[in-house]
Every structure is written in C-alpha cells, then in structure tokens.
Image 1 (cartoon, one colour):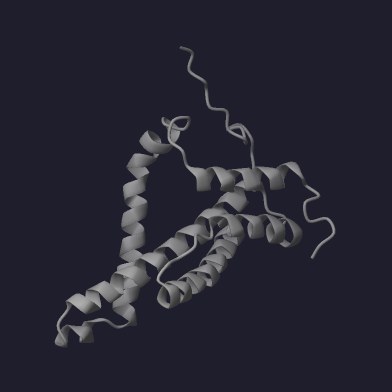
Image 2: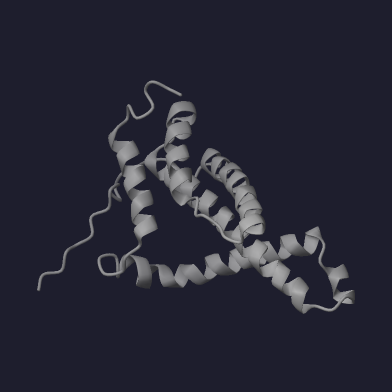
Length: 171
C-alpha cells in the first residue's frame, strides 16, 4: 500500500510573512470580540458556537482589503482569534462550577485578577500540552483523523488566497 505524501499549500521554501504584529493584533481583537459574544451566549443560553470559520472569513476580508495580509498571516489571525474564544468558553463554564462548589467565605478569592490568572494559565497549559501532541495527532495522522472544522477553516483560507479578487468590490 503506497503512502500518500502530504503536500502543504505553501511550500516550505516560500519566503512569506507569517508571525507579524498586525496578525497578532487582528487575531487578538477578533478574540476579544468573539470571546465576549461567546461569554454572553454561554451565560444566556448555556451553549457556545465556534467562531473559527467566521474569524477566517473576516481575516481574509479585512486582512486582504485593509492590511495586505498573506495566507500565513490570516492563519495566525484565525488561530489567535479562535484560541481566545475557546479560552473564554472555558472560563465561563469553569468558574461558575468553582463558585457553586466553594464555601461562602471562599467567594472573596474570586476577583478579576484571579479569573485572569486562571484563564492565562489554562490557555498556556492547553497550548503547552498541544506542542508535543501536534506531530502525533496532526502531522502523522493527517489523512486518518477527521478535523472537520480545521479542514473547513483551511478551505476558507485557501479559497481566499486563490481568489485574490475576493474582496474587490468592497463592502
């Protein structure tokens, strides 16, 4: 049985901007906006909706039109915004559980600084745990494990890159 070799969309030899300040800033802004909407929806309805694909679409649209971003920068924008939104969902579902399980005098420990520190450590722990698992789960198992949302985000970013006139007429 022949093994199919994975061919990336952007070749490793390509010199292209990827990890830039504007990508991090746009991703953080999208993370805050979608994170706030995630918190509101989670507290109001008890569920969340993933924002990965809408952030990918916004990264292509705004990035291409206003900031001249590359596909790799758009990937950083989408990943940063999606991770921020996921951390917000983790906080909104975890902290009420802590409060319900704690005693009345322990409620004094939960202020904004503690919530922020817990969210930062939770996000760092999730990122650090994914580093050793990346090669095993994503690189080596690319063809066998289904990642429907990740595949959809990649398809959106590729479509935006293939059609450079995607936002030609503006909004």
